Amino acid sequence: MKILVTGGAGFIGSNLVRRLAARGECVVIVDDFNDYYSPSLKRANAHWAGRAGDVTIAEGDVRDQAFLEEVFKDSAFDCIVHLAARAGVRPSLADPQLYVDVNLNGTVTLLEQAHRAGVKRFVFASSSSVYGVSRDVPFSEDACADHPASPYGATKRAGEVLLAAYRHLYGLRFAALRFFTVYGPRQRPDMAIHKFVRAVISGEELTMFGDGSSARDYTYIDDIIDGVVAAVDADLEWEIINLGDSEPVTLKSMIATIGEAVGREPRIEHLGDQPGDVPITYADISKAGRLLGFKPKIAFKEGIKRFVDWYRNAQAQGLL
Ligand SMILES: NC(=O)c1ccc[n+]([C@@H]2O[C@H](COP(=O)([O-])OP(=O)(O)OC[C@H]3O[C@@H](n4cnc5c(N)ncnc54)[C@H](O)[C@@H]3O)[C@@H](O)[C@H]2O)c1
Image (cartoon, rainbow, N blue to C red):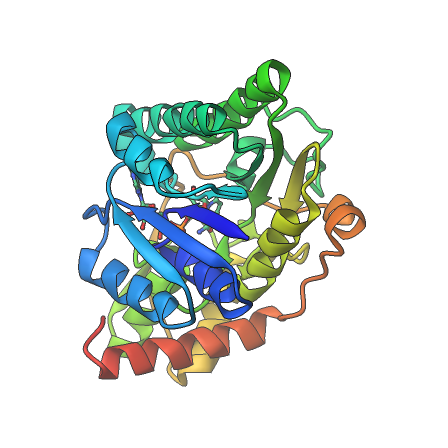
């Protein structure tokens, strides 16, 4: 298959590209290597993924129609996996226009291009943040997802709705995958687990928001990639599917697990709740199991150990 992966130099993207290339797919990465976090980290990700097989990189912005036309001119794609976005809840409160611009204009520009090129198979990175502050757990895909708690969550829900319009108009086949807090090697440096591991390893104080009882359904990267690859292969008609671990972990317990894996007692600065934060995320993954054979394999403790090992290695190589 020839597969376009937007955001292929990012955390999830590079792990996906490596897996697809290793099993013999021909992969084109579209990424603008922006400076939301270190572009050199993204270049290292893309280089690492590219070593696995047939991977080419097209550097540019998914909002740039002329650029996308060039990319599509050279290739007949069987499938598009659209991961390029501005990610992260808190920064979306500081710059909501940018989030709407990249996540919506980027998605619609890509959808237009896919339509013109006759590409029918589309996998979209949505997010657990569409569920907002719901306490009706576990979150099921049938539940209302129209009350997100941040501009970021709103853009992800709007992306799903755009896909539905393209399905109606042009017969687009799509899987919108709602990822639940993904962690593991190459995780974005702005995400809590990455920041906390950095702080504990360097003996600095980490910042804990709220009383530590908030809970997240942390999902190991390899499990997420299993789900994304299964969605590429399944070529579903049009589905929204949760991909999570379905085992929420409290913030307090997450910090303690990091302390154990690093071998040092975390030093904690306590601050109040942050706007945009939600009390819990918890995925009902029965639909993913039914449609994709999805079954997470990596328990949280083991996943954190693997992340800490990766972090130390990357640090020794001067990557972080
Ligand atoms: N990491 C998570 O826990 C998580 C959870 C839910 C959803 N998601 C979604 O999964 C996707 C990947 O997330 P990630 O954590 O790997 O983030 P990431 O920031 O590491 O990856 C996104 C990549 O997209 C690229 N990009 C951003 N804007 C672009 C543009 N306009 N044109 C071209 N490339 C652009 C970035 O340079 C980056 O390499 C995102 O859509 C994110 O919203 C992630």
